[in-house]
Image (cartoon, rainbow, N blue to C red; front, side, top):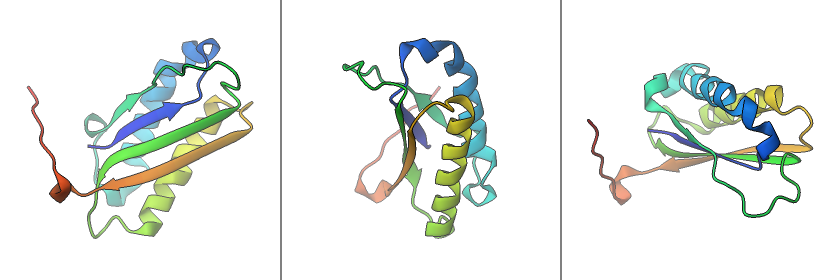
Length: 116
């Protein structure tokens, strides 16, 4: 299950976060068909930044927990990263820098889940 972790969003942007999170989740789930994901497979979090200086100027998105599979090639991961950056830019046009890092996950390295 991919986990989106977004850094660099200031509290002044809080009114946009719910809509942005929903849009970003849908972008990840549906914009790259090769990922074969549903919206319910994706989570999104906004950790509180301990330093307020520069918030909103640089926004960094990490896509963690994307299980490594043969069909998730470099081209597919690049397509996902570009979709995340474009979606983020639509919501935070004043940011000087928007980056997305895709961090594939190999469940053979250790994984467990519990859901209800």
